[in-house]
Length: 225
Image (cartoon, rainbow, N blue to C red; front, side):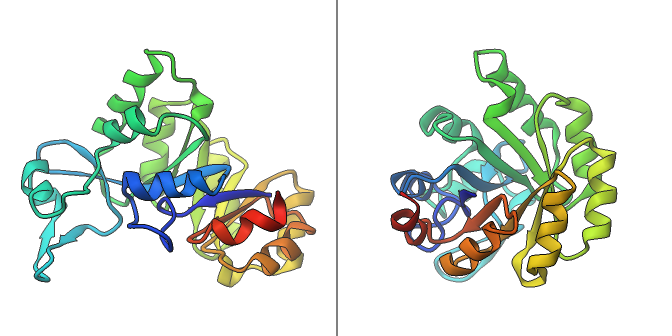
């Protein structure tokens, strides 16, 4: 079972930051997961919510502000380019592209790195938006796709066939051992998010859970190494 750092190591360091990604690597994750959004001036940044919240509580929509404007409010705001150049490909990078984000600058960034020696398997591209996944798959057909589906296994299978993948991530609240075993028996890989209970993860691994996306990779480190 793969251990996947959620937004880096969200429970141990600021999420979607270089420090958070490095913290996850320090705890020997098998994969790094983080979120991408695009600023008004077309810079791809790591951020989960559509708005950045200032220290004083004011919200600023990322799509309506430039990178420099946002960076002035959040000093550890990281760009996708910066992460690729700093963190590199020590483990595969599981990139979640958020709903309604422009994919063009994301595709451009990935293609640029593929042209300089990066390999398609260094990335996984995921989204809850099927429109987004279809666009990413059309532009980057060699890169593995992860269908992120909150609760419906039937819908997950339908979506996955459209983008030629057998990788699915689902909310752990809706999973049970029989469902997981069914995925395993059909030769698909199922990742569970956000799974912070090592005992549950190890129990589900026996039925074929392929990956645990966790805020606390440190909790999984000792039992598995």
